[in-house]
Image 1 (tube, rainbow, N blue to C red):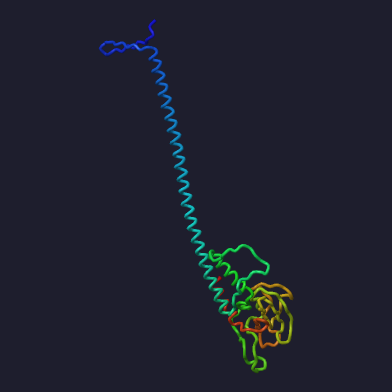
Image 2 (image 1 turned 45 degrees about the horizontal axis):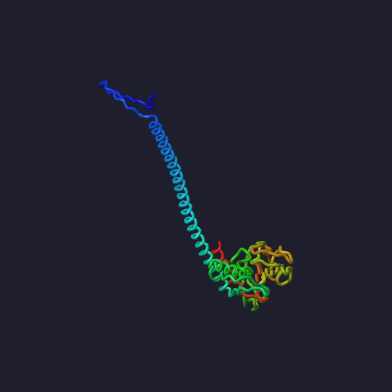
Amino acid sequence: MDRRFHIIITSEQGRARTFAISKGILKKMAALMVVVSVIILVTGVTYSIEKFNLNKINTLENNVANLSTTNRTLQDQKDTQISGVYGELSRRNQVVESILSTLDISTPPPSSGKDSGGPFNSIASRPYDDLIAQVDQKLETLRPLPLGYPVKTSEISSSFGARLDPVNGETAFHDGVDLRGNYGAMVKATADGKVIEQGYNDDYGWYVLLNHGNKFTTLYAHNQKVLAKPGEMVLRGQTIALLGNTGRTTGPHLHYEIRRNNRPINPSKYLNIARLLVGNFG
């Protein structure tokens, strides 16, 4: 029995050629073709996986680059905003400092309690915190100061100091300022404070006295009516009385006094400082 395969090839002229291949060689060729096919298949799959992984890595790298760019942009915006806020805070700090200087009020140095402690954290390396601390401290000093006009007017009918008394025409000392206004106009507190006295007498008519702390008090006199109650805590700008013509007066107005250490001081600077506040703090 022949163990070979015969392959016959004919040409167009009819000539024939015969090739004989043994079955063993044919099996080896078939096995080789299978191996080659497997290699080609594995190579193709490996290439596809590598290409997929490479594309995935490229995508991740692009995402990281985009996030990095976005982070830098946000950081730049944050730095710009912080710089703007710092600049505005610095400007307002100078305004507050100017107000205190104009009023000849000094800011007390920061202090700690007797029984206190904790780790030392230098504020010198944190300029933002240093500025915020300065502003907070100055605002604490500014808060109890009676600033601005207590009634809607800028007309002073009688100034602080020596004057001719409007009732008897003799020379006298005026402890406050008289602010001409409409009868029944709202009289407002010029700082946060507590009503420590309220009532009526022949000189002041209906009056109210506020204690603002830090040794400051204010007096509002000749009112038509007092609205604030004894012991009540009032806020800056709160209506405490209505302008009138009670007591020793020659016409409707508000007699307004600022006292420090229980002594009357000239209110003019405290009245006019309101313009600086409105211009710089809205």
